[in-house]
Length: 133
Image (tube, rainbow, N blue to C red; front, side):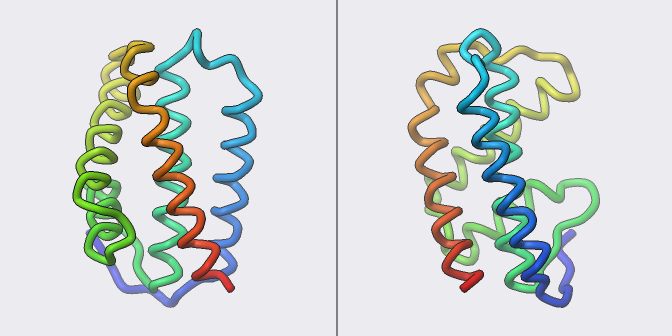
């Protein structure tokens, strides 16, 4: 459920820092042997950036389906394209299946999508930094 809240710039800044720290961790670790962990970590970065962007707009997603609605919020605000919306939703589904059902994500999935993931992360960080000025 999407609810209106008071915009929280300080919390958004904190989430940006967490996302950036997670990115450094991803770069420093040898995740090629652990593609599931890398995909989960990338998803967390995207989710943290999306949450921070929502907070700058006075929006918060809560409850069941919150992540799905948060990603849809990015599209509704035109922060991402329809292709990116579908891409992130697929990533969310993969992450949830690994996280909740123990399904592994293969290296090929990671390798074929990593460039797009990094592009989305860069785009969201850029938009967020602009909103935090």
